[in-house]
Image 1 (cartoon, rainbow, N blue to C red):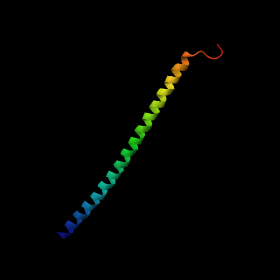
Image 2: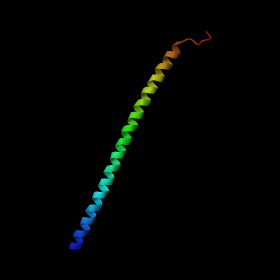
Image 3: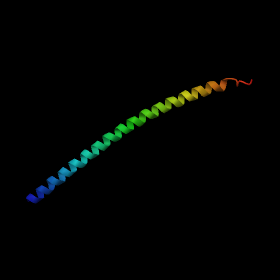
Image 4: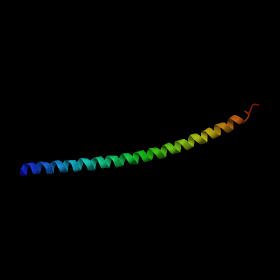
Length: 65
């Protein structure tokens, strides 16, 4: 009976360690995702600015006219 309790305690400790490891990995992935979202937002802003500059340039006459 005591061996069974010791096995269960060891299993519980292993599960606690696994849960802690998974929690840390999830936290790291959430940070990575937040950073990627910020980068995407910056890229979207740059693309929007480039599209605005292109539309302005389309309305201008080339210098050789």
